[in-house]
Image (cartoon, one colour):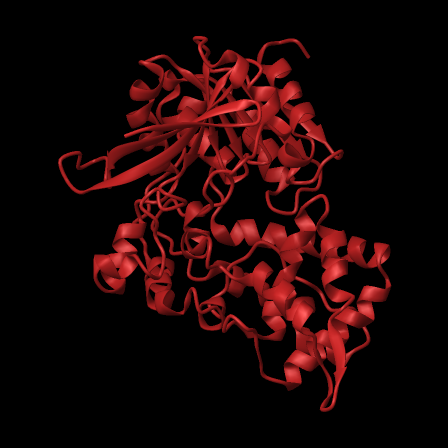
Length: 433
């Protein structure tokens, strides 16, 4: 069933598909996928090539654009665009604390979630492509985790692709999650230092907030238990182009005077709960580390274990001295499943995923070395989320891949400078740059 409607400058069509939960068992259980087709109003009747967009994450539905801003406006000059809600996100049979109990207990839920990595997402794309394009190949645009999916696509089904465009999402082909986080913590520390250099007044503000949280129990209006570690995780903002400024604005109104003394303000608590809650994207927390799992080694709460190797991130130790409090970045920790009411019922499920040891490889280095699909990738010079050294090593592995290494944008460059980024990548795959 489809529904077509209009927004300024575009015609939109809701599309739904049925695919196997496990593509190795095509006669077994099925799930639903949702995607939004977008075409420029003036080209709605034309036969255009297709571009499928894979959102970053994991665990986020595709962007809900209004009109044709940023990269979408550039893409619509020559493509019909399919904005896919990857399995488990958006309207695609969502996976969350409300729906997962339909599977059974934690063991059944964890087994179900093993089918929500990039390999299954790519097989979904290939399953629906004939119905969308009539069998023609399409171009994939992968942002962040969507880029991980694009590299899997090149490994698994390059015959489905006209070209692959990757923005901030070239994964290591063989790094374990431990390797990813050992590379990440020093990058995060650099981003925090840059933030404090820009906003030196935030050093004392962050210390004061953390000290308050170490000595008081704070529960946010939505039931989130705000600890010092949870406060530190606001550092995830620092990987975006406007993130440092956003963090500063959150910190500057943290306290208010009350008859009982200084307390965290309602405005601060409202901002923080919106930034920390996983209610809209719980799959991100559940499968974030297993997107790196490719062998018999468990992820075993990798970010938490590796953090112990970087004691400068310990809030209590920082406050015992006179140094700055360090924020953390894109990492998932077991305490999040205690703090966040959207995750609490899923703690045992997350533990089972962290202990799992039967992961399959996601990438095929031999096939990538023989690649003949035009590929271009934007690599951001000091990307907080995806290690630049890992990304460039992978770029050298994929035959014919052309990179654009830039410090003009942060990880969210496809949003902040979308038209310029997409222009550059299209020029690279067409040998025009």
